[in-house]
Image (cartoon, rainbow, N blue to C red):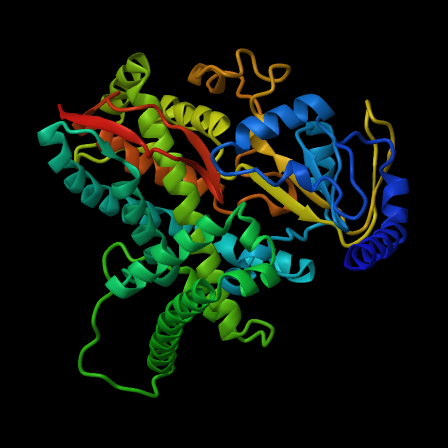
Amino acid sequence: MILTTTFLCFCVASAINYFRTRRQRSLIKNLGGPFSWPLLGAMHKLLFLKPQNFFQRSHEYLTKYGAVTRLWVFHRLFMPLADLELAKQVLQSEQHLETGYELMRHWLGGGILMCDKNQWTQRHGLIGSIFNKGNMLPLTELCRQQAVLLQLTLADHAEQRDVFDAWTIVAPAVRDLMVLTTCGVRPSEGYSEAFTCLTEIYRKRFLSLQSVNRFTFWVSSPLLRRRQAQLIKQLNDEHKEHIDRCRRLQKQEEQLKAGTVVVDRIEPLPAQWHQSLLEILLASNHNPEITDDDICAELNTCNYLGYLLCSSALCFSLVTISRHPAVQQRCMQELRKAQREDQSWDVRRLPYLEAVLLETLRLYPPQVIVGRHLTEDMPYTHSEVGDGTLPFGAEIYVNLFEMQRNEERYLNASHFQAERFLDYPPEIYSFSMGPRCCPAKQFSMVLLKTLIAPILSNFELLPYGDAPRLDLRLSLGSSNGFQLALKPR
């Protein structure tokens, strides 16, 4: 009786699911994909997907089913893509801007990564304004000061020439730099610890069946969910303290300009003062649509993205350079020519180092997957699968890792060749493309060059330890860390 009832319920649910998705299925019948079981769909393709085997499994999947595919899991339509022709149409669309990153909605919801498409233009403009020409010089100086601190931390390992994980040193330095850029102050010890712990929680939840959606996470991990909420509250409480402090300073400045307040002594601003993202957001806060919660979400989003993506890019760059002695030697020659009298570098005169960084980003894009969630149908044209329409509700995931290793677009695509970015640089997509491309692209390259230049100048990077074993936990990483050693020059 129980088995019969279970079977009937399964049949009814399968029928409901079929009729619910019938229209979507009719629109994508020209696309290849794995066999879909009634109700369950192709769940078997995701059951054993882990951060450690993601790249092998995804490569096998795309090789078998093609670069434009569809995959059903219950009522959800996933579309893994590694096809540039269709990916450009999706990512460059002005109408389809929803990213659909539900995993991090509690932390980053309301920020630029997941804000409504009607708010996107305003938010993008506000965040992009921090990297205007007048603010880039003090931001570069801020990066240079952080590079000095990073160099001092690495000196201890260089003296011992021991193998260490670069992530453990690089990531905290990048985290502090991000908070300085967005909030205008160095993070407190409690903030740093909470931020790192929260990031690790989300990295562990990624590709976990227990965390596949909010309901399963709520049921299966109540203690972890509570810890996550506490950490988010701790970060936002400190953000709100910064908001109150910044508002008081802005009010005092306005009163001083108006002559309504007289003070005996005014503290001068630092010589290399920079305008923080928080100040820009507050300056535009006459718009009632931007609330304090929205500001907290923007600070969280920019700190998270900058920390995770820039740390990954810098670590992969260090390890890659250490395993290519000729590349390291050429970088050194360029650094000597571009060095100033104050021992800093003119980052604009480092074209080869920039080419090395771009080639690293091509092979190891920190953001492996770029997602879009369609809230309306999207017509498309395609030279192979034909013209068609991507249906409302489809969840599109563009695989940048596979796209940037395509042999048809890049000669010797799997080999590290920085020279390809010198004369006729090919297009790369590590910063995404279209309206939702990274607004901090220019600053990110300045940051990476400024942080890596003193490391290369003061230390020889030694290819000790094991090579990285690629895994995917929100960003591209290595399951065995980023192992290398240093030797003082």
